[in-house]
Length: 319
Picture 1 (tube, rainbow, N blue to C red):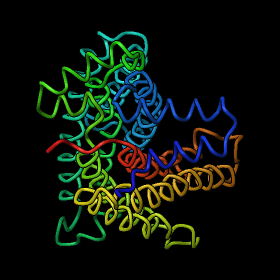
Picture 2 (cartoon, rainbow, N blue to C red):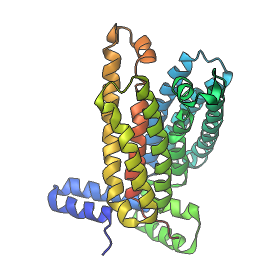
Picture 3 (cartoon, rainbow, N blue to C red):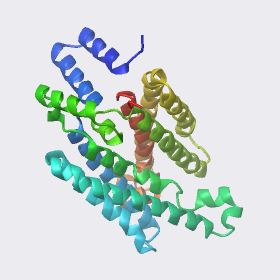
């Protein structure tokens, strides 16, 4: 018998939780499994866009916004946050405004990746000194990680609303699903586990690499700084396995993804503490946030854990 994580969670909830809590959890899992969580994902997109916008905003501030293109992610993160918030209340906005702003933001991340590569190449020694210039130059994968919220926004634009799970609508949706095919139909009905697992592989690599050279700058002063570096390959391995195996997607992937999510949250606490412990502490919040540890960077690592957990709760594509 195939192990299905959502079924096991529902059974455990019904056995061990009070009826109201069990019913809430079961409903949430059903919405995820059927792809009916557009409002919720729009809200997550709005929240994460604010965090990523603040992160890129002060990182580019340190670079004095020497190139006008450095303003684009700051502006787009605000637009994406607004589109996500509007998408919570409007189906039309979620399927149009959010979709196109997400596409533009993803394109901006790819363009930013090119500019960061060029910035590294233009440092003294260029790519003949790869380690030194990657560590001391612009963060190479940061523009791609900036696209996390945009990618979630793009996915949200194809999902169904929470209210679409009502019995009548669900029967109509099931009939439509049986007659339609393609990735859009799979996405609308929560069948994109393999796709999201593959995405988790990439995001774990990007965020793990960022953690590696960011912590290398401080010579891994604290042992906790090794945890994202060690967890990233585990998440990648589990996500690769999840693409090929339903069992791994329902066992190993959620386990290591939960660890990555928790590690990112703990890292956020350590980075915030590092800022507070700088000379002047909270009396100089702007200065210490700019020149202390990047406060939101651990949340980017947590994002790959979130993607892995979400993938483990979805259904697999039909082909």
